[in-house]
Amino acid sequence: MTARTFEIGERDFLLDGAPHRVISGALHYFRVHPDQWRERIRWGRMMGLNTIETYVAWNEHSPEPGVAGAPARFDTEGRLDLARFLREVQDEGMHAIVRPGPYICAEFDGGGLPAWLFRDPEVGIRSLEPRFLAAVSDYLRSVMEIVAPLQIDRGGPVILLQVENEYGAYGSDHDYLRALTDLFRDGGATVPLTTVDQPVPEMLAAGTLPDLHATGSFGSRATERLAALRAQQPTGPLMCSEFWCGWFDHWGAHHHTTDAADSARELDALLAAGASVNIYMLHGGTNFGLTNGANDKGVYQPTVTSYDYDAPLDEAGRPTEKFWAFRDVISRYAPVPDLVREPVGPLPVPAPAPLRYAGSLDDLVPETGAGEWADLPTMDAAGIWRGLARYRVSLDRGDAPVVLRFAEVRDRAWVRLDGLPVATLARELHENAVTLPRGTGVLDILVEDEGRVNYGERIGEPKGLIGPATIEGVPVTGWRVSRVPLEDLPTVAALPAAEIGLGAGVWRATVDLDAPADLALSTEGLGKGLAWFGEFFLGRYWRKGPQQTLFVPAPATRAGSNVLTIVEFESMASEAAAFVPDLRLGHTEH
Image (tube, rainbow, N blue to C red; front, side):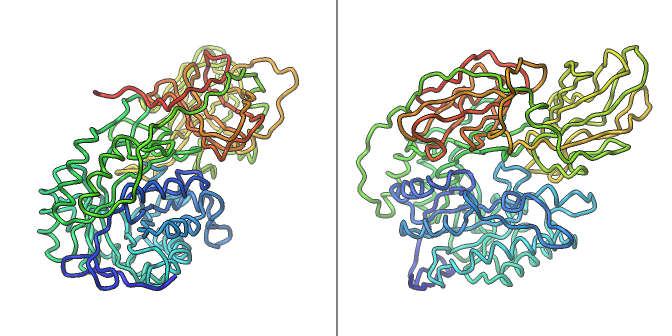
């Protein structure tokens, strides 16, 4: 492709020297099956966008630390193929904005920061602390090896790169921002570098540098907030690089929506002021697997599996009423492709598939890599960065009932004594003690990391059982802790003639399809657990809602027989896996 220029002008972005308005939409490649990227990108173009924006999730690319002093491996396979994603954006005739962080928030596990980074509690977070900055340097080097050759001045689609993310809401260390900026430039960044903050004077001042272009994040009162941004930055193009057109959901709360007409009016006001925009989100996608984040402002609130975000394209990638309202607004300020509106049809509904018990989680996925610890370790101390951990200890405290206490449970623990369930401890209820029927026996505790906090002071905190663990004030010692290798579950063989056991169990169903298709797996009647379609990890379900379906992307399905695997931690009322004709994201406030 021909190299072009993209620069910051006195009042506008300049594309090859001419004024250019960026009309962008957010689409996170890691939240969408890679074989569906192109379709979502094309819908963005049909809405009138000229640019696609994405974060880069460090912890997804580097889920494990480096070994023997070597940098952590940077994975680019499958849904992590950032170069393929950016080339597909370019093939649709669009530009790209890349936001590598290193912190991204995004309601993503740990805000995108890898858990292994904070195994040493002395490592700083979003700071100049040397070990943190050394790891960030390795990470940004890997990112820029991919992104630098794809910048617009080298014939690629990338026009902007963002440094950090809403840093003014977290800190004000300009030396840290300068160090990050230098890492971008050293990695070959030649396009303009930006920052984003809520348009509050204190945050804008804390979160940027004079040679970085400041942008705003907001979803309402566009005229007022653009004025605040202009007061902070007298020259250069105005841009809302996170125009919030929806919101995210927590388990146990309601499904958030925003009125399409109201959002369209705010977008109109923003564009009428001459500003550029990045709509957050164009298409939210899904927190597949165990990638959801969480918030904790006194009460722990994990984010649901769906990241629908009430966006112009729904979780299945279909245009919504908001898509058409936004397209109509954009058409007043920029050309939009011809497009005939057609009704959105229902998703296919396969026949209900009987669920068959395949065995207990303990038996199907035995403990691996168990370590022995005198004092109670966290999951992080045991090298378990995500998912499930098994804790086991032998007690010899007599036959009378005893109370076992922890400092904290992060995030949910199922307690068994000699194989019999005793209690469940939930972080969101601040539960950290359990009465055992006796003080003697083998104590097993299955702990679920329900999602690492992605915003605020608790970023980087360890997961698992937080010590000390005591009975009558005396420490419990001699722990054995192991990781549950969930990646083995879709292919592990069922146990012969397995009887339903107590505790977490694995269930299977065979789903017959005429052809590959997007599906909505109903989770009504299920309790709390995880689901795979074939070997594709759909994510978490939970009876507390609001989400009542799991999205199954068509590329994860096939014509003929498909195996659905479910890990149920508690109990289910359903005897069959059922599918419904549309996604059900739960009740709203309206």
